[in-house]
Length: 110
Image (cartoon, rainbow, N blue to C red; front, side):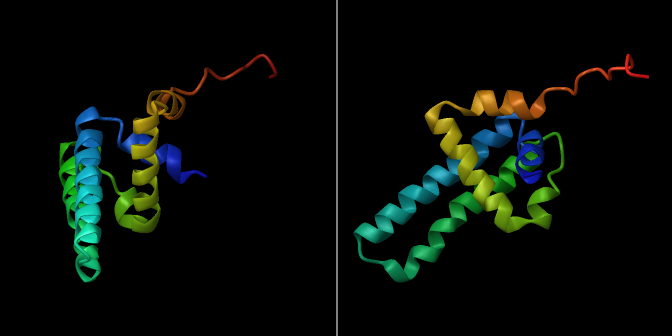
């Protein structure tokens, strides 16, 4: 998938990722609180903190993330995946893999 590496490169700034993570965590807490109170009808409101976190994160990013505007569905899934990798400790490896510079071209075959 070409979207995931591009999404990670666009969210390489730690401040941007932190805003996304705070928003997602608050959305999870809001969803749990609404479910525990039996307020299923208001569950759709739990997405607001995640959206606000993403908006702030994109304002803090040195790059302007056009991917999220072009593919909001894929961006939402990638945001959750990025948060899951953060929680499990795999985000650093994934960032290194997606943000490394391409290797030098091999001109010996010419």
